[in-house]
Amino acid sequence: GTVNFTKLLTLFGDRLNGTDEEGILMNAFKTFDSEGKGNLNKDTLRELLTATGKPAERLSDVEFNQMLEGAPVDAKGLLDYAAFTKLIKRGKDDE
Image 1 (tube, one colour):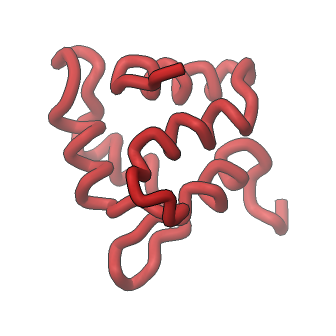
Image 2: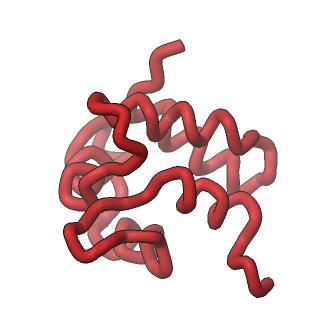
């Protein structure tokens, strides 16, 4: 189904509790990838997560930066959300 901002935050929250699946996170990111390229612009994602939705549900800039710490973002500022989802669910390869 459709994933809105609130649902995306819920998915991230569920991850902390270990209840979501990798496919669900991937589908949440895909919702915002209108061109189907497999990546999202970091600045666009920042806007979605820090300025959209109810104030209590928004991430702060600090929280957003912490979320993307170590994330696969290239020199153009594009987040590879498939790799990021794997990182969220499985950790780094060397862990």
